[in-house]
Image 1: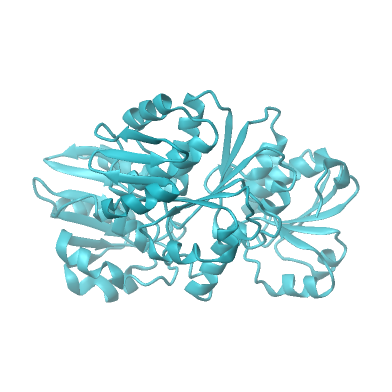
Image 2: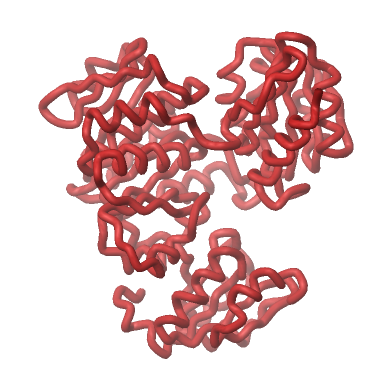
Length: 462
């Protein structure tokens, strides 16, 4: 794999996928005089917006299908994260000796600055943004990118350099991770996800596990002690090569964690030890919703302290940080009913955490793209807290089969109608919550678009 920019000159490189990542790669590679070809299964009209962004670059295009002949002519093939590495054409190319990698693995090799790699099923963006805020407030220059932000290639193209690079690392990005070696690994949690891409939960976990492939004595891993699947991963010899800090909301773990280093939530305080001294942070004024937000704060404190974040700066951010859009985001109160947008809740674990924020009388809107995950773990919490379940989208029939017997349930045709029915069924004191448990791609281009549309509909209510 290339590690110096000068090595890219005249190399024949094929980019698979012309989304946001593919566009960034086109600019970066042509800037360094590589011979670039782009292939995408979508047609030219479908890619018109992206093609406008690269129209002046010396790039060849093969659109509408993938040609095996083109693959065999390359020095390197780079896949965008959204492209599954299991397609037959990739197996064929590999069998003919063609080197195939992902954009993340390719780009990270050129980064010389310290890297924080944040992974987990949920919470990656919140931890990345909190860590960024803690460090920025302490005068440490950061750059944030990865799975939910900018492609890593954007950092290589930027003129300004950071002191610390923070990367949200998805399982898709890790599929090709062979040399990736972050200074810190943060693992937020691990639950069933992306089973439309992976054949089993085990395959998904194995992709996530790759973040630890190159850990060494200089690596500090920050792990969720309350998540059994993450604790199990920590037994891996690769993880044990470095230092480990745990974070927990369980006060009973305080003696154990304070002994080895980490963070524990005790009442309205967080107790932290990353060196010889114990520090205290107050969360009595925290603005973020959801008990899981305390986990995100603890993980962020631990990793930010590793890179020079100051106590007072961290405390100031904890007191003022309002959380991110589309994550249990308060929209408004209409007729005594509170509306919350959790469009980012795209899997069962996220819905569970969202419902954990509310006591009862929830009218829950679920549904979206079918990803084959199991909704049954939600049965008890649906029974206890959800008075009405409104289902919409591609996965609604299956969610109904698995959850529909546990509360009043309606299957609705359109998203707008689902929101209107939720409001009609609500009474004073109720909460209407959009926490879909599914990706948005059956009806929307992104969870952001879905959440924004939800808010737009609600703003019209009287």
